[in-house]
Length: 154
Image 1 (cartoon, rainbow, N blue to C red):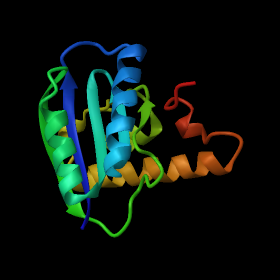
Image 2 (tube, rainbow, N blue to C red):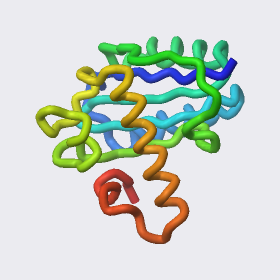
Image 3 (tube, rainbow, N blue to C red):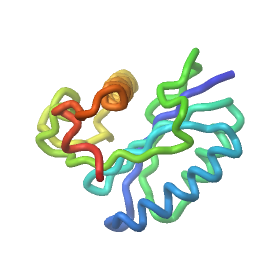
């Protein structure tokens, strides 16, 4: 049974690019072995993550992540059976962005700031779908869509 899990958490310290790279490198190894895919977003010490895969593998991955001492206030936003993956080729990929005055964030925030603890399950899923669609567009074109220029790190 294919599932999608979305959670948020708060970093206990400010994460450097090197810290994030270490998390991603380890995640890619662990997730590839279990065929878990997904996306990690980080802004202003907030983590917003989507995990996709078989129920048992996603559950085990989430439990390992939730126990990581580098973050706290881990909240499960949505856990659903799905027919397909939003990020089928990403064992784990990362999007860093400015959580303020970002066009996508503005559509899902009352105050223009990325505050994922305020997201409903519906908002979180709509946000992820929009991110997945924007990534797909950017992969098909040479130039990234204007709304994503603030998202991707070089």
